[in-house]
Length: 119
Image (cartoon, rainbow, N blue to C red; front, side, top):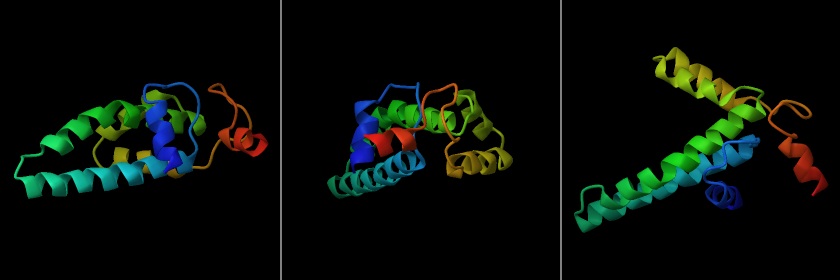
């Protein structure tokens, strides 16, 4: 849960690096919240109003943590555009998201694993 809140606190920070756990925990909690809001919308009879508002609010934080995750693997945030290539792009993107952090510092900042270890 702390990773999810950390992403919302840094909702528009596209610089730096994000660990795998930060990215995937945000993805998990974002999915859970979206599904819960969908169920509430269905129960209230509203047509995706709460889920739609949350979805719009989560776009920027989701993009920011994705770009920081790409930075952690040593890739530019522009690699996010690979998802527009059908099938192959999605597979390549998933591989990037599952890759381990680039060891040591890179051009995007210090390794977040090492920063967390010393904190």
